[in-house]
Length: 309
Image (cartoon, rainbow, N blue to C red):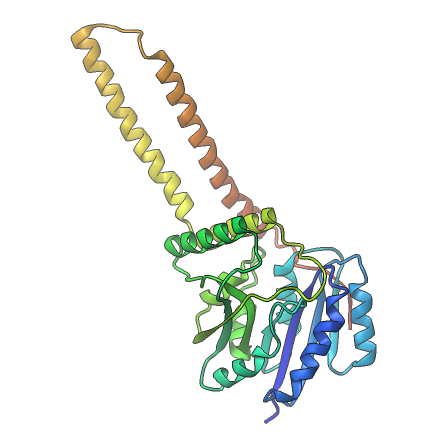
């Protein structure tokens, strides 16, 4: 039986890395237990020469190399979903083009997936090379989301994984607009094993993921896979009402026993400002969920392809 592997490579301003990635995979290709291989480079609205590099590889190796170019930048999640839809292999892997995902790991991943696993994922042993503040917030994010969500998200897990066709088909059934793939990979279930490896440096170029983008991405992950912020807002509202009721009861009793008093106006103003700030914060949380609903019900396409080959 012929076995085919599809490699999905989302690209955003990666003109230097694309040919290096292709060469690195070609070097280990013959060590993989497959009969066919296909590359799907997804150009996520890059305005450098990334598309040109994909076109050159396609002209050089049209049987293996394919690409899809978006009309604009839709984000990595859209590029990943597009690649999953384009892939035709019996096995599908998602890899970063900057070679931070070592291609040689595919050899070990295939040895495990042939033992009955549906997915072989990867996770970093450490975050060497990352800014300390980014590492601290990443660890905090994983601890937080695993406490408030029913879906386990492995600390340090990468998008780099090898999946069976059955698992990929299940992921494609989740066609929601607001996507958080790390959560979706876990949510669909299936038997998964994680392989650890040391953090790798980029082979070329610079990352487009800054701290703010990672922060907003983590917020999206929490909102997409947990209702805890809404539960927290409801609990705080109930608690505030309860404490306020006790305070009103205390004021009434004090008035009956000691008469009226105008002292404490400063503390009252502070409490009003504090509670008002908390209310605005929770209105923001509710607004975030409503915004997600708004974008979801419009049923806009997750991406638009301008060119494909």
